[in-house]
Length: 151
Image (spheres, rainbow, N blue to C red):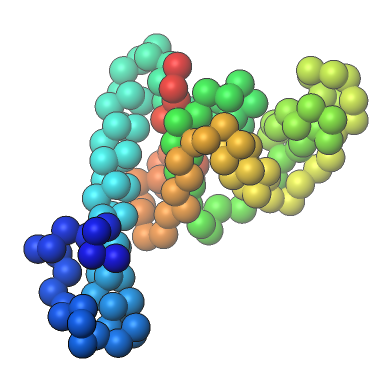
């Protein structure tokens, strides 16, 4: 654990600490690191989204699902409270917000009450970073879901 955390951030005598003490001390440091990573990704997302025509950010469910299908997502950010329906093709894994037929292979699509699980699986399948966010109002105006794109 000591190798993972900066010594200035972990105030704990590891030799005498219980497992609960280590979890408590490391939890605060890890939460701080997570918040810093979220802030950095939001900064990158805002910068890319602000550049019209840049094409390196997807905002809202439809554009994010499209980027996931194209395997362009570097980081997926979504609000944990988001409930968004959609459709998935069981053969090619195409995802969209609506439709009865897959535009790729013409097969019937399956409706989902929440498409988020499929979106997260697709992001992980392309080695994208996935951040399920709580208490981040920045995602509200973006439809509760956004992504930074690799290309």
